[in-house]
Length: 505
Image 1: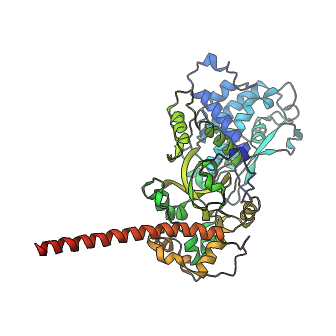
Image 2 (image 1 turned 90 degrees about the horizontal axis):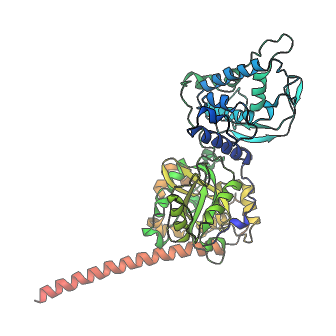
Image 3 (image 1 turned 180 degrees about the vertical axis):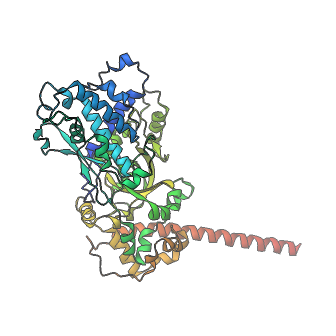
């Protein structure tokens, strides 16, 4: 096995939008930090003395708003902000950023803005993506000289804004109209109403916490991608499990392939460790690997790499901890022959809901058959198994970059199709292939279409690696079939001898 986190390649996104961001991780970590403090049994006198958050004025008041991710919690925030405005009667847009009002620099506004972004995402049923905002924003006629972050949604909701600046929403709710001293009519509650579909609001219990946001999937238009497949892609989508997998729990990944193709969501994964053959073109064997990923899809590759590196440090150690889960993982990663499926990364490593799992890497599903440190995988709510998203479904630019960034340029997808065209060897071994032909065509009818070999422009027309990889598996299947036939013939001969002996006696 070989650790590859020390040479993390800068994976360029194979999507044009809605990528997970480091800022999103920072927001989620800050909120976890805040709510972890809330979960501690701290007396009201002690609560005001918490020093974990720098310059956290009004912390107790903010906690008293009971931020439970219900929509009615926004009304409680409005009530609290009203008391703040009454304490600061001159809190106008002309003075909001002056040194005498330190609220805008405090953790209170930061946490509140993060909470607003996340609760709006929950209400819209869309994962918020956080970005730094270098642009100037105006509050009234004053420029907001403060660090902002904005939230963006990859939205299909018509007539609703797909991005907003939560901090600006808070300031607008705090401002008093300067000409007559009347309180600003626009509250946070009203601002949120403008960002959430009325159909959702009408069917939501305002007192109940909203469910977590759905998985933030990398863009994979299954309907379009599958419609462009043909008969030759059957061979590409199928796997032939090696002989060693027969009694291995990774075999279930093979059984779940059709389900993953049909219902899988695409998220990033990063290697923790992998069989060293996967990094090399010298041997074309498909092998296991251990990865870390975020089933919510909100964690970028850079953060996954940090966690992967930390997990790898447990190798060949007995960690000085009472955490049974960490001890279990250290034992697993040290013994390179064990498997671990859907392991929840302990909270002591990261509060984010990351998982580590073992998977079988089918070399032909990588652009050039050579593993790199991070790649997209298919996950599903219906199974704990995951698999590499076949590279045919990656954006062509990302597919090409993967090959160009490597020392090896052979094109797996082209090679499989070319072999299918020249000599469809797969027919001889259909019973060994997964998913079965009928199972795939039931889910992807276009696979029954006549094959066309003229539309794909390969990165390389070399086919040695593809041929070797396929022939290795076919040879094992042939050997297995031959062994089975030998057993059958042996049984027949034994029965014949037995009957002959009986007849003789």
